[in-house]
Amino acid sequence: MARRGLSAGMSGREKALGGAVLALYLAVLPYVSGPALDLLERLLGTRLGESVRNAIYYYVVFALVVIVFWGYLGRTTRAFLDRPGGVLASAGLGLVAFYGLNEICGRLLGLVLEGQVNLNDEAIVGRMVDAPRTTILIVVVLAPVVEETLFRGYVFGNLREVHRGLAYLVSCLLFALLHVWQFAAARGDLTYLLLMVQYLVPGAVMAWTYERSGSLWGSVLLHGVVNGLAVVRVL
Image (cartoon, rainbow, N blue to C red):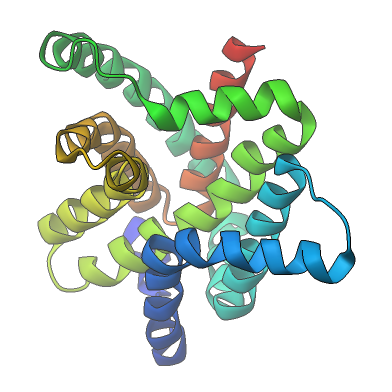
């Protein structure tokens, strides 16, 4: 069933445009969004709060992903509706695997990365204090849909047609890189990239959930639940 769900795949147009969207999300938007929002503030003649700027950024990315991948999202939704119980069961198994493996890896990594602070997590905590409802919407709904579509649907799904192991490797590495490279660049500290290893388990588990469930909504649900539980701990 997983193979049938993934075999719906992406059209040639989605593959071509999806690569551009992925590149924008990974390497371009983090740099141009700030100046673009500054320009918007000048045009409006008002100061936008950090939470509003963050919401605009994710709404724009979310809209772009939905527009480009509309057909694929429709096909993967039909795969979910064909067997909702199986998709939900896969997400549940993924949740158990995530916390089990993450606990083991977290303890091992704590010995290696002792004293290294995860700035991505700190940034989210800061946004929770400043604008909890907006932050919850972003981390539980918008970010999971965007990141699962790009890293699991686009990268993993397309590379899996070539080589399954390569699909896991590349999708996990890109997902991990997303969460650390901006902080490493801002600090001028390449050792911060070592924190990528914290995101390899989540990336692998979500790819497995997508593959097993046959629908992207399995990994989106898992991603949203994991983020939601993390938010609960912050609150």
